[in-house]
Image 1 (tube, rainbow, N blue to C red):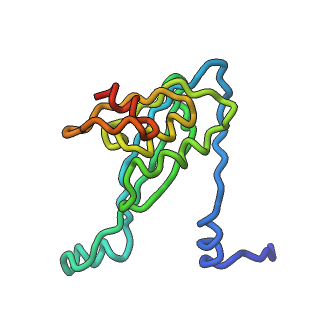
Image 2 (cartoon, rainbow, N blue to C red):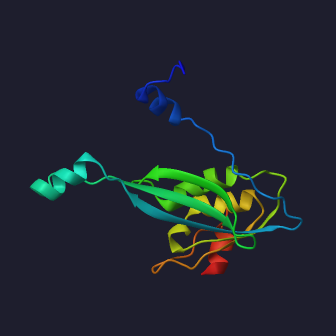
Length: 154
């Protein structure tokens, strides 16, 4: 076949803005979502050089952030970032991937998500946020969004 195929660099540029629609089934009641992330080590030429000559450069890590429906075990939202971003920074973008008309009852996560951005995002979606407190967690001033929920968790 005489088909034209785009060059690798063209595909790489297009991949930056590639939107992915995850199929899912609508639920009748409010969702119970679980948020988590894991690190992915990127292998390539750098890893071979580290093995052969020793550690002379930083290794590349990416993080995959997932939002999973706790009842149906379906992936509802996904985001991939570089390792410099904190877990709490990503949650508003993850919740934005969910349709606004679908109610969220409870969102759960680990203590890395005990941040102001996460509480603000959950309050904007009228969801209860369940997260264990950080080891040295302190009460927030009540004038901030989500501070009441955070202080109740403490």
